[in-house]
Image 1: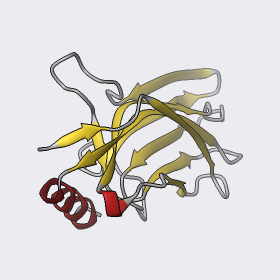
Image 2: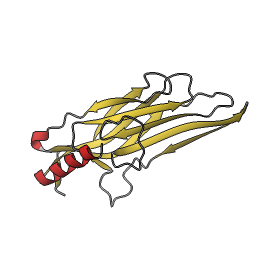
Image 3: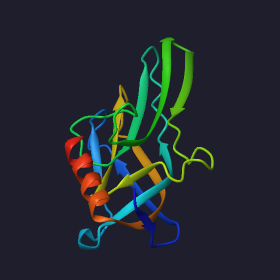
Image 4: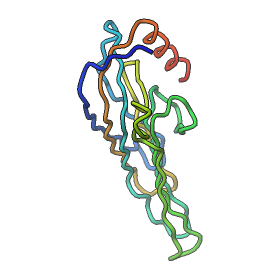
Length: 168
């Protein structure tokens, strides 16, 4: 794969707010890549910060968020190629005043020096999605993406674009 980095590390900050409580919502993040120059985005790390779920006595609540390479009709997971990062926060409540909270995140950082980046985006957008479960009010997800622009050779660019489109 022939990739040549053309920028220093950039950060992209974005957020998504549910349109209504417990409703899957996604925000489109315009990357302004130049497809004529076969420009791609190398993702080095992602930080997803979801709002805390509501504490509802006797009810399990949650907030989940994902960053994906293509638009999704529902919340995806890290088992799918198009998912770059995921985060979730939840509260389990079996009875009044008996609640336990938990949080989970995908490995959203470059895992050691043997892997130079965690993802490549060749199309012009990425998407930040969120969905709450049993919450009383809509929830937010804030994201910080650490990335760099790069130029791909023609064969690599074509393969990356085709892979993103076919995996959506």
